[in-house]
Amino acid sequence: MRLILLGPPGAGKGTQAKYIVDKHAIPQLSTGDMLREAVAAKSKIGLRAKKIIDAGKLVSDDIVIGIVSERIDQEDCAKGFILDGFPRTLQQADALGDMFEEKGLELSCVVELQVNDDALVERVAGRFTCGNCGEGYHDKFKPPAKPTKCDRCGKEEFTRRADDNEETMRTRLRAYYKETAPLVGYYYAKGLLKGVDGMGSIPKIASEIDEVLNSL
Ligand code: ADP
Ligand code: ZN
Image (cartoon, rainbow, N blue to C red; front, side, top):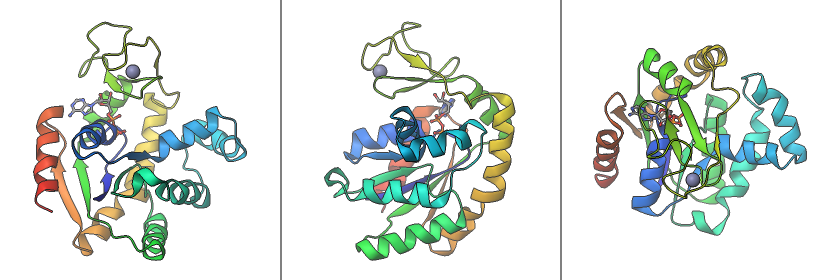
């Protein structure tokens, strides 16, 4: 199963991807995470990306596509994968289509998480992540059982993304509606789009996505 999770920042893509990973045993490929890993490792591509990410802008297509293509070739992606945060533009979607064709792969479906702007800003402003295992949390909507300790791995390494503030969020939302939202029509036209109401509770949305995936 090869899926794309589509939706604005804060829509719950990462959160829902974790459920799909557990249930369907396929990896989550988050370009954001892959890029941040490259930044942390101070690799050549990472240093190039850092300046752009810090300004709340999008990194160039060749950087992202190169990272995704290499990742898809790894063995744990043989049975499928979840793309979370990629593609972000029509050009990237076309490049991804070409890449799939070259590799002889087919996309199973695109799940679009629909969430209104006020909720997005609130979700992103309260978001934090375990630096050790990557589990996502929220101050209000998904607090850990103990304030400083990860429920999943027990480590005390919570981190907040530098770009998860209201100001950068506005820039990111504008970029989403301008650059990424056209993918909704793009994949609809290909018969691959499945819209899911992303305004409910996390488990409710997870079960709605599960219904979609089981019907494929
Ligand atoms: P994305 O990957 O789409 O940017 P995340 O999965 O990181 O979004 O979710 C953003 C924040 O909102 C996280 O802190 C997460 O815990 C929280 N969140 C995710 N889904 C919901 C939901 N359905 N209701 C409330 N908060 C949510
Ligand atoms: Zn953890």
